[in-house]
Image (tube, rainbow, N blue to C red; front, side, top):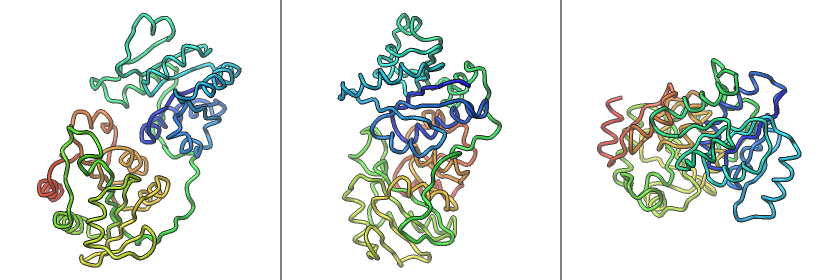
Amino acid sequence: MNKFLIFRTDRIGDYIFSRMLTESIKANNPKNSIDFVCSSYNSTYVKNFKDVNKVYILDKYNLALMIKNLSLINKVKYDYIIILDGKRRSVFFSLLLKSKKKYAILKDFRPRLLLKIFFDSFFINSEVNTQYNNFCSVINYLNIKVPDSINYYNSYKFKKKCSFKLPRKYSLLHLDEKWFEGHYYKDFNYMNLNPKNFKLLINTLIKKFNNDIVITTGKIDIDQFHKIRSHLFKKIKKNNFLCLLFKKKIIFLDNTDFRDLEYIVKNSNEVICCEGAISHVSNAFGKKTLALVNNFKTARFWTNHMKNINLLKRDNINKITKQINLL
């Protein structure tokens, strides 16, 4: 039995990807113990996995908590410390931690002398290799192997039910902030959805998949959501809207919780989204996914191992619908 401490202080999608490492560790020896260092943002989510023994929160603005966790972690005497998030705070914090072996996947923090002194091995997180291959390198250094099939949601405590009723057969269209200009990176191409071109998108999806459509959103409040919703949808109950202007039923679920979103993805036929956490979830469930991307090279860095994904170039809705029709 070995004790592992893994740093993953970033986003939920990154953690889901990291399940290939935890699954490999457990497949090698089910008695291996795995703890995580997380951010306040993703710590609550990570605690839903039963094979994670303990979760520590690393908050650079909370010095008292950092000192407390430093003491608690060093008492455990870990065999392996693995930094997956590449964050500078994770690197510096890990320098104070005791462990037999230390490994790291890094982004832009590369003081080689310091890293050679404190780490047994480190990997630069460039797009020369895919992220999947980067993780395989770490797993090889642990002298274990990647399982033939990875159950990303093994040991996960799923929500047993949700407060809304879903159609029997549906496609999921996830509209998060990545669809709308001013809420994500400035150098992205944006679709700029409005009631008119939204109709074109919906009709294209109905023609392509012949399903009802469930639309979900993220937690960010966006004006364009409200304009589309007020023009085309009728409120059924809180955060639940229905549109009957199309050949199929269109349900709009506003302000969707991520764990509800997992439930919706799991029960869908296919997923249409921007590449990100949602595409990691759909891949984990083996769902056919159409993912909008800004840069194919960067997108393949994250998705090259995914078998059921089609990457579409982010562009105006007319061009996107043409891409969908050609699939």
